[in-house]
Amino acid sequence: MVFLLSDIAGRTGCELVGDDCEIKNVADISQATSGYLVFINHAKYLDALKTSSASAVILKPAWLKECPVAALVTDNPRLIFARAAVLLNPEHKPTAGISSLAVVADSAELHPSAKIDDNAVIRAGCKLGENVYIGAGCVLEENVIIGRNTRLYANVTLQHDCYIGENGIIHSGVVIGTDGFGFIKDGDAYLKIPQLGCVRIADNVEIGANATIDRGALLDTVIHEGVKLDDQVHVGHNVEIGRHTVVSAYTGIAGSAKIGANCLIGGGVGIRDNIEISDNVVITGRTFVSSSIKQPGVYSSSVLVDTNSNWKKNVMRFKHLDEMARRIRKLEKQPAE
Image (cartoon, rainbow, N blue to C red; front, side):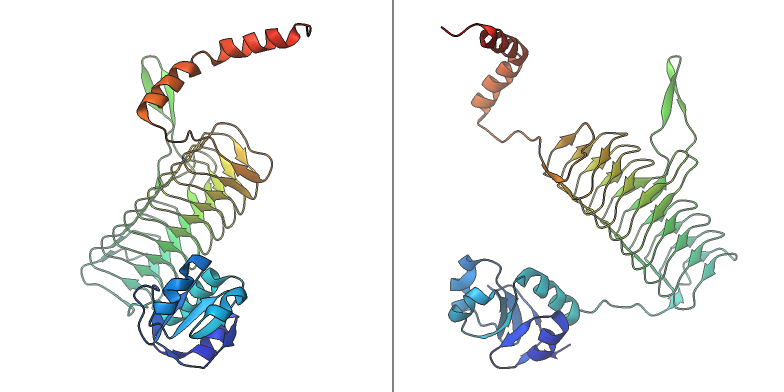
């Protein structure tokens, strides 16, 4: 698909400076050729722009004087680049129809525009909206509801009674609606507690490959509008994640934690059960959140990498921190000489 640069400027909300031209697609600045659009988000790439063969660039107003090609000018080049990439690469819409190799229950309600690929299984009571795509090998257990324009890639499993909203993207290997990790000690063994809730996912949510979301024990697990979960994120039972919160890969969220809206959670974060995190909180990678966070801000708990020899010395000192604190308090109480 080819667009005029002026058309891209109008549709993405920025200013065109220089000659109009045809744009075939976006590209990395190091590999772009004629007909491609690139972007610069940092001044260190200005030298690369001077040798690039790209037809146009997206950049900030301050860098225009060093720009040798037509430019889309904006204070946020990365955002405009993303909008242009979406415009130039529209989502492929599969042709409607049900594969002869799919298994669909007679009582399932499928919109005529839905696409069901090979070996998908759709159980009784399921309802699929307009333009829903179900990839190969997906399993939808009883009474699953999926809103319009939502896409499930290959080998997604939605267990019974789950609800998925509109315009969602669920990548391969995701499992939604498994039993929450609920057990209670019963003598020397553990008694499994029935998990009677479900999972409710709102509109415009994207879930990365191999993520897992557990169903609630009594109440539902709830993912609100616009949430983005990276690959291999685990969401425990009864968790609630607020609107437009983003969670990076390998993060684990334990049961009944409540996370606010517009939060940014880094990779490998651990969030303990039954705590609350305020709106507009940033948690950096590898942080362990052991108590509630009640105020917006940036929070961290990681220990920075060090040489092995220094690390071992500091580990030994960690064991004496309490003793050292008591000695310091004792010294502070002594009268000054």
